[in-house]
Structures are given as structure tokens and as C-alpha cells.
Length: 167
Image 1 (tube, helix red, strand yellow):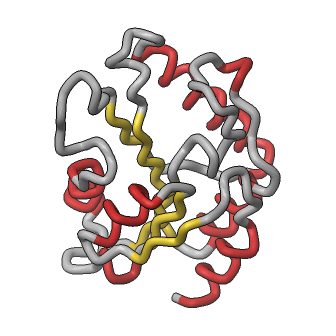
Image 2 (tube, rainbow, N blue to C red):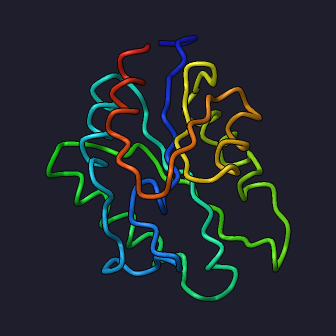
Image 3 (cartoon, rainbow, N blue to C red):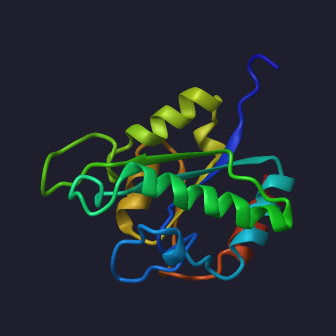
């Protein structure tokens, strides 16, 4: 329907969706879901939220891994979610790193959020960002998205349940 805006929950990847290992997660075998993530995504899906992953992937710029490695991990994540009928609506990632060049898409820059908002007609005031870094929250809040800062590898199910009951 024209004029109707979508609500979304944006998720950071490493430390929110999967285990933050203290080094780059660049191979599917290294990708381990955090407890409760599949159920968290499902409760958001069932509540009418788009679920979009926004992630800095600076290891690409550092030539530590390739874009294809990131895509392989995202494919594995989607496959793991099938067990609970949960769905990620889209993935946006920044392949740059500040040590090599500056960009507008690397969080705390907001360009990836802006793209998602434009593509999916998202209402920022009804949307949330869950991240394990201040830069995740800063990027979202620049656009009126409510940022929720968690500890790395925290189970976000209760947060997602509360979000789903708010709107």
C-alpha cells in the first residue's frame, strides 16, 4: 500500500548474531550463532518487522577475506534460520576499513541504513538497531532509529520479544 511505511529491526552481525571471537569471522565454519538468535529473528518476523543485518566487514579492505566469504557466511546464516522459519530480509555490509580509506557506509556512518530505509520504505521512528558497539547505536540514532546497546554475544531474545510487543 502506498504511503504505508515498514518498521524494521537492524542487527549488527559479529557479537549480536554470531559469536564474537576477537578476530575476524570470515569462514562459514567459524560462524557460530549466538544463543536465541533464530528465535529472536522469528519473533520479529511474526510481529511484522523487517529484519536487516548491517555490518562492518573491514577485513575485505585489508585483504584478509573476500566478499564471497561474507556472502557464504550470510548463506549459512539463512540456512540455519530455516529450522525456525525465521527470515532475514536483507544484508548490507561495508567492505572498507578506516586504516585504508574513509567512507560513509562504515558505522558510525549511516549510509547503509539510509539505503535500507530508501529501498524498503522504512519508518525510522518505529525501528530499532541492536548492536554490541557504540558505533552501531550512533549510526542508527543519526536517522532517528532507536539504538539498543548489548554486550557481545548476549542473548537478545527478551529484547526482541519486548520490541515485538511495543508496536
